[in-house]
Amino acid sequence: METTAPVIEPAPSDAPAPPGAAMPEPAALVSKVLVIETDGDALARIRAFCEAHGLQGHKVHPLNVPAVLRSRIDLGAVFVGTQLQGALSDGLALARDIAWLRPELPIFLRTDGMPEAQAGTDAHAMPRDASVVRYTLDGIDALKTEVDRKIFDRVYPMSLVRTLGEMTQTALASQFRGMQVRLDPPYVVRDRLIHGELFTPIPMETPWCRGFMTLQTDVASLRRVVDAGRTAFSSEEGEDFRNLNAILGELTNLIWGAFRNRFGTEGASGSFGVQVPIIVNHLHRYISFGTESPQLCFKCHVWAPDDPEATAITIYQRFAFSLSWAPELYRESEALLSGFVESGELELF
Amino acid sequence: MANVLVVDDSSTVRNEVGNFLGSNGFQVALAVDGHDGLAKLRQDGGIKLVVCDVNMPNMDGLTMVERVRSELGNHKVHVVMLTTESSPAMKERGKAAGVKGWIVKPFNGAAVLGSFQKLAA
Image (tube, rainbow over all chains, first blue to last red; front, side, top):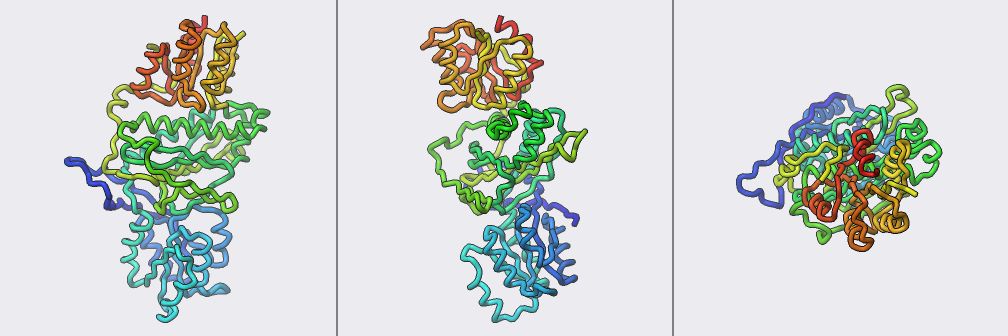
């Protein structure tokens, strides 16, 4: 399904903008949503809605929902019709299952044809934290407010998103010899999934943000890249998982450093600022930074041009500005940029 | 006896820089943090050049340099910082501690080989 990415309306902020400060231009982001419908008319209307509002709709057959959820696609929300056709016709029961499985995902529940009494009682079976929004096709346009509130609830300045992508691409290119790097368009997710077995959270802090970045990837792909001689380690050294860890660790360090150099740390609250526990559940490949807010994500593809099938790795990068977010204060560090030194060159004192 | 010490908590960087310098005729010793670096410098008086990260656990690189000068009384060894940091304040602290040069990661061996050879001579 093709999408048209919208410009996100600025969201209200707790912190007042300083006099004369202009809100930076917001980035156009997208988010993937699962669409579980069997009605052709409903599908067409939902498709049009998604295209108009920055959602990448992925239609899935009701019977395939568990497999799709297990495949760990990054999602922003789920659209479910209560009246489905086929072997699994009870959309409401399916919505309940999804809500129990992934309570962090908002569910947009289409209730056309559903008896009024049933629509009123379904909440009892839902998890307490489930976020369910009921709608009908006639009122689908009103869902935009809910989509903005639950998925695109944060303004990410366009130049910030562009810069994050650039510094990530530079770091990746420096660590994987002779490999190509491509980033998918940035997107936002409400999922809290961990991709692969290896991930590296690191705090990110500026005067306008506090939170974490993670890089996530799978060990088998990384091992193949090492075996192909594309990293600082030999194939034998790649047998030590700590060296694989170190590759992702150094990548994380490079991006973290570039972020600090670009945006500065002056005025950041430092180690005495508020913290919340980071919760990791390995059984469910789940990580929470303690916030309901969607995360900004980049999916990075790195591959060897001469062997793109076997020597390739996907790295998921997520930014969870979970502790503070004030985009109206966002700025690049002009002082640091004016003293810019090309990386890799020796500056003698 | 080594003539270059590479101090970095990342084994990726130790490998990359150590292998590059080793293949270009340097005798390389490795250390995993500032504490380790200080101990290696205490043990080996032949080290002429230290390539050192800033952000490391246990003891950061700039603290290590300050202690090399103050505790070991070693004012001859050349220290080049190899780091993601590029803030003027950090560099000023490095200069005050007697740091000779500053490289912002990622490491580009070809760009610095000539300078390293002079500093380690």
